[in-house]
Image (tube, rainbow, N blue to C red; front, side, top):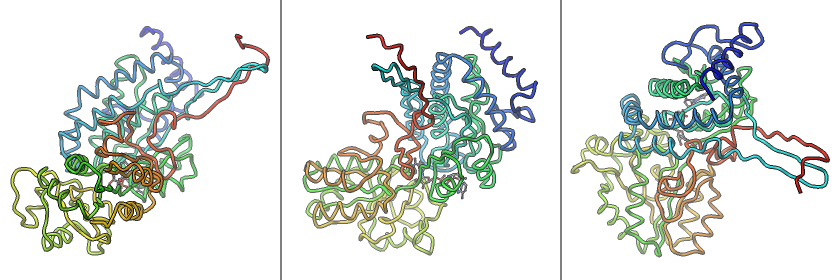
Length: 467
Ligand code: NAD
């Protein structure tokens, strides 16, 4: 569609705002695009953008999304570096991979397939329609990735979004919002498809969750924000914490398991919710497995060193992690506890009993607890307990199909990975699309545009069947 036609639609919508038929932002957006001082202005701007988005042809929506992918890919180094500098979490090279994953493998409009029933009574058509304005709360662990992923899915569904981003990552988040809006405008789409709050706080998150005109709340974060979203009184998609266990049995390819677990667990210094968090390995192969982990560059701690690390990274209650160490390089922790190492080790491993905090709690650090188990069934039973019913992610390395089958059934997670690093379950080296909002508590799993849309049916009785 030519630029003039789009411009005409934009002008029509703006004249309706002038006439008072539609809400308007009470102040012009500050620079960068889409960043607002308060929730009210952001919701008003997003409402206008949504109206424009649904007024332009679907082909334009596809073009906007294609250009968002292109512009984000061109800026991927900046996104990764900025997030690392601002939050201090993870590794730049891994953040580049995470961003490229969401840029290329987040589904767009193509996932919204219409459905039709025809018969003697005529035709019924079902299509997926936008909610309008969605409120989305995002984490510091994947700041640009979550905005790009939710942004593409929500725009594909015809929505505009107001993000309340993590205060620790507000700069990277605002940069991403601006980048996406500029990509939209560049091909004749509206500004402010994505909006965010300049200085996000828990108070602004709560205001967004209750704000009139916000039809759906999508949160990605820890247990507290999940609870808050579920109490918001709005339709909610909640992606919460996990504690992904890995079971390794005696039939597994031990070298492949060690290489895969090292790569998966250390990915972006373990800040991804789906990354491997603890291992249950069958006793008969445990020494070989740990040796293979060391061969992959992991640093194994001795007992007194484990105690020192525990004191460093856990709070005195032994339950909460010391946030100062979340997502930091293994080398920094090793230095802090005075353990010699060479190079830039990706992962620290600790042979610990089942009740140890490194097994029981989501650390979000390149520290992996490994517990020895009698046999594969004990490993699966421990995995179920250590997952704590989050229903999030789990994995297993085995060639025993009965054991794989049992674990798949009893672990009951949104994502279960067999014989591959956990990131394969996000579509990185595994089949299928990706999502960085994995909504286990509300049962949506890897969310897409399908989840960000509502179902509408149109029935025409007696006509339109063609056979
Ligand atoms: P976090 O819970 O500290 O923050 C997430 C967001 O929620 C932030 O924007 C924060 O400001 C907001 N928030 C926190 N408490 C709130 C409250 N009481 N009311 C309103 N808003 C609140 O999490 P984080 O440290 O940014 O991210 C790490 C956590 O998120 C981990 O537990 C990880 O497993 C989880 N996570 C889950 C997924 C998933 O898809 N399931 C994806 C990424 C992260």
